[in-house]
Image (cartoon, rainbow, N blue to C red; front, side):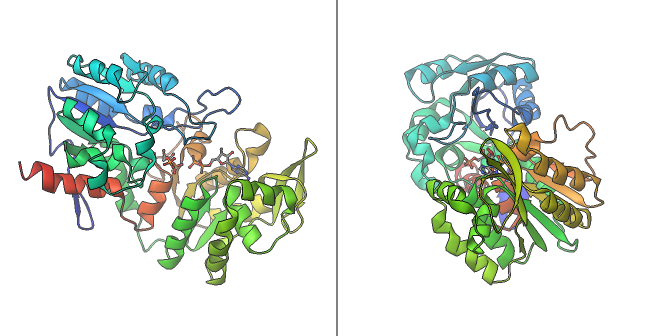
Length: 414
Ligand SMILES: Nc1ncnc2c1ncn2[C@@H]1O[C@H](COP(=O)(O)OP(=O)(O)O)[C@@H](O)[C@H]1O
Ligand SMILES: O=C(OP(=O)(O)O)[C@H](O)COP(=O)(O)O
């Protein structure tokens, strides 16, 4: 059992599945090259080998289910390439089923033989999946009602989606015997141990594009005084710079507006006024008339694509002095080679520092490359980004709550 505060989460040691048909929720949501639509990192795809092999070796047949991207974004794609990569890394056939809960998928699941593994298509093609709702409500969703009768059990290994109260995460545990998979188990146990309150300074490096999530996380970190410094990059830095009243220029303000982020400025301002330890870049690398130039953050005219060199130097020195460094979300538009430098420099500083590094989020992890030189006693590479940060900030994760509830309501009562 994994114990987190008052939650008791069963693992594959507590509920042993053998010869069963199992639904396994994984998170293989990966960065995508917007030009080609191809995956640019496969670390999350490799992460589930242990869980999948262990379950297959016990004669179970597995139906893998995951999301990829969000509707409207360029990374909202089908999981066909993911299935090919899973087959390659597992060295077994993982059949791609181009359906989620329709007759084709259900027929294929019914006909599965022991040891077979299939991957359903992007679960977010089903609109219900995008609703955040309590487990009891999701238990009544079409997704859960159509798929759950076909299974003997449910395994949740999607730590990276543990902060979402979505049907494929919290609905199935209400009706099926459920456990955490090996990735979930390792992440939760390791992070609970690593994040020792006595180790400081703790420096959080937060970038990327999921600004609403990040604001929520920063509010938590500040309220609980968990961070000594929060170094901002990506769109989060732009939001805080705007909140501080810096002149980001018309184009960047239009980008913030288009992404619906202007309404978050008052929240960012409140964090700044409450004395939150937020660092904002002093300069940015921008794209201007097709050229890459650096501009001070109080007078920006080009489109912001990365942090500037002075900021890289200042942030690196904070990182080098830290005892614990948590990194999530890139400093810039890393899909473009010209704007990878900020993220790369900060990552190198973190790897060189004496501090313990916790790194999460698909994009930052992709910067690690193969990661063969990484020392596991100094670095924890999490499959999670937002989930990781919310967990570290002390929030309860819906996926863990659902597994705990499932154990009490579904397993113990049987
Ligand atoms: N200044 C910026 N303007 C626009 N997009 C940015 C900027 N900086 C980073 N990004 C984008 O943020 C995305 C990654 O953010 P996110 O999904 O939050 O990270 P992760 O997957 O690591 O959690 C990338 O696609 C990157 O291009
Ligand atoms: O990539 C993910 O989160 P992350 O960017 O916080 O690591 C997860 O797959 C969750 O995806 P979502 O933030 O679209 O719900």
